[in-house]
Image 1: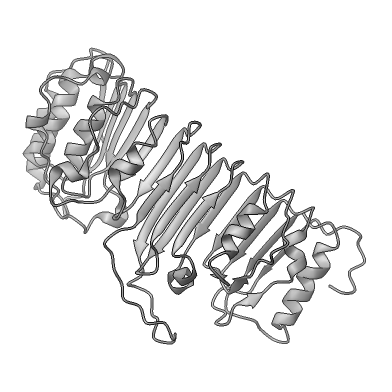
Image 2: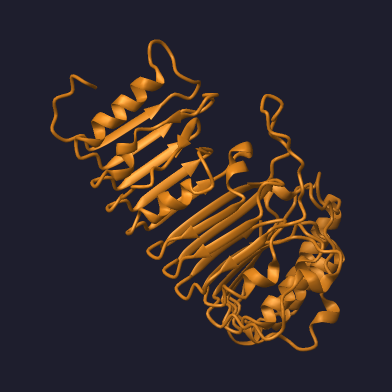
Length: 384
């Protein structure tokens, strides 16, 4: 790199998946990055996976005026100086990095006035310095957060008025081994606080959370057009829902995971409150198949009248990984019977080894559904 005489280095990608090898040192990494920054660098991607001691990058990186894309993965210490400015940065990826202090991430995000796409994933103990995770970026349009929770994580704070797409996942850190650290982890999974200003431009949201404050989140996403949800179980049904009066007038596509006990009650509420829904998908996430072996479907008493979306707008219905219980079959029949604008209904049963049905019973269920009444003459029923 020191002998590289080109006046411009458009892109620099360094990946050491199993730590540094040969004669490469941390000083080499820092030197290469520092040189690239002086050559009008536009894209930097660093992956130091499995490097035990994180590498601190040169401070000049955080004042690079030409940088547009920055990707930092594993084995990197994000130590942001007080004087920081990345005026051209539009895409930022931070995966498994270590933060020098509570303010490092905040300073980094604050220095990106035109940032549009942000991806952040926490893996275990690096989250100890982020008790409050703040995303305050007025220009941000796409945000993906994957947060490993423990007793150190207390709050998520957002101020992203330009956000159009938001994907949020949280998970426990129980699978991480902290035996080599000096940190005494006392895992507490009782939840965390969530604060956010309105996101009026938000069009699509994906949420997979076992700790989320359902009502708080739902009240902020009434503008979305596409929504994917996997939300927590609650001991009492009403806690898994949200307050009355919220209407998703813009919602066109809903995807709901059926892994939790009260998913069908949430489904009924969303159907009632989404008068213009056009696409509905019920699915069981592959990673959640063992969470609830046979999720009950409790919806009969929740529907005093047919939801407006079934009568006037729903065109596509899909249910994947269905167990085949009678209540599930009855729910499918209800949709088929009342969805007057339905064009396509696709049903995918779980494999026989995981299904509640034997092969001959499955054939009978398929025949029963095939002969069931339809609210739409044009609906095409497909079994996969």
